[in-house]
Length: 237
Ligand SMILES: O=c1ccn([C@@H]2O[C@H](COP(=O)(O)O)[C@@H](O)[C@H]2O)c(=O)[nH]1
Image (cartoon, rainbow, N blue to C red):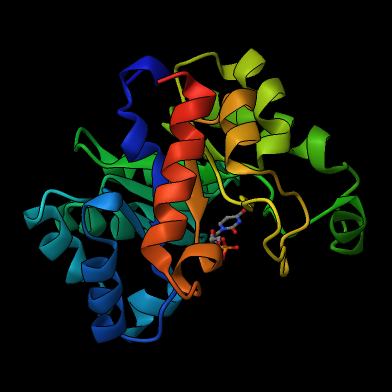
């Protein structure tokens, strides 16, 4: 799907980082038709949230399974093959060559799209160096994007700060999905590479992932609607 083909409303992916399936379902009901795309990550998946994928699909919503797999290639391939049956649109793996190769093998010809997490948005250059990496954020993101492209990965997760450089490398063949989104005035929390929704879209992001600023808001629907309006304005839609 080229960026022009993505419906503006589908570009906001709300992270259901909530403690239980009941809490997630209550949030989905509150957000109503403001949100069409949800992300299920560690917190909800390990609290029994995987069956929600099919329930959301039945309601016409899309699901991003943010499981960030990383293991030996064979294990990743087998795990991804199981995940293809859940009905999610996106699944994340860490952008290590063996992991990405296994994920593409496990995905096979299914409709599941594999996203490679380049460098977590809570990391800056100092964090990478402390973890033993020689490269800084921008160099590592770009190197991993090149490897992901060669291996047949469908999309990349990065901060919006890297989207311009990534587009030059991967063109429109891969989806660019960006967490680290903060509406003006909201707390950054542990995120270190952040941008507002409008600036991220203008920078060229295809999808914006927003968790806490929506699900911890007093009025989540009002915040989601404001983000959708900012996205539409940045797209000139
Ligand atoms: O590099 C990454 C990859 C994934 N995430 C996930 O996105 C959401 C962001 O939540 P906020 O509350 O809006 O910070 C969260 O589920 C992360 O696990 C990311 O932040 N960065």
